[in-house]
Length: 481
Image (cartoon, rainbow, N blue to C red):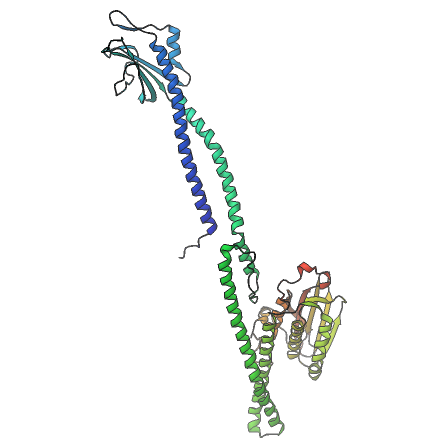
């Protein structure tokens, strides 16, 4: 199972957010270290002042006995500290307990006279901070020291450190949140050109091989866009060579096929023997169908080539209808068909290429004449709504089954290969011309034939009306020459 593709946006988010969290962690460690330092310094100074004040109450008598006389209120004040417990221990030069807690931890290193030492320890299951001051018994060189120790639990210190860290980190966290929002917006706008490029390619027709715009493309995307433009140019060149090959081959085949068809017709008119009449009829039918295919291939080649240089302008559909009906009135009359034209609007202008629109109607009329039996009717109707112009060709021929209606616009698709001389390209050309004009085409049941009772086909093409179409909403895929 293949892993899902990596997202550049998610990778940018991950790296930037990890960097921000790393910086925040370092900042939190530094903030905690500095807060602990200042809180410890402040409380240590207060503890030392109390110890020095207590040392003033220590008395050494003439027998070198150490005593301390504290008023009861002073003893209560020394032992009271809101939120913390205070412990005191005073020992003489020989280590004898003079006052306070006998088991209060003493420093592990000797203390020099008139000096203090700070250390951390635990007492009664609680962490404590202790300061021990060495008070000389006398001024003699080898006199011992009285150790005055005072310990305090660390609740207030911890609360002060937490408050200081919170005060320092809260603005940083808010700044990180703001930076995350700015980063998300920055990622969105930085990657927006890639999204725009994706949308431009997604909305583009597969026939549109024009170069992508490089003027508004960021510098980092320029190599990608230039490579895509080079690829589009190679594909365009290959398609043009293919179209030219089809056109050249069709031109080369048209003359010998027409000659073969003419010779078959002449041979049949000379009343040949029955043994060769059927082969001649087969040759005539085959050459007629092949001639029709060659004509369609030429028409398709012209259509494909013209889509790269369409001359869009305001076009009157009424004029195109009358011109194409004049071309097909003869074949329709020869087959016993009636052409009926209904022009129900005077605002018949659309934005398009006149030659391509004529080719579209030409194929619709030829298709209708080809598949409508004698005594049939072909109706060409033009009308307008508030925003659209509709061109409709309706016949009462063999019809198209609803389940196959969508496929008739595919190239070389035929409902019945053994019926008629069609080659499956006429309606494909109609669909391509409609697409290049931002028009839609659909097929529905047509009229009922009076003799065969078949229900024919009705092709409806919907255009945007030029009379109500603003300049900025005209078809975007036009290529004025």
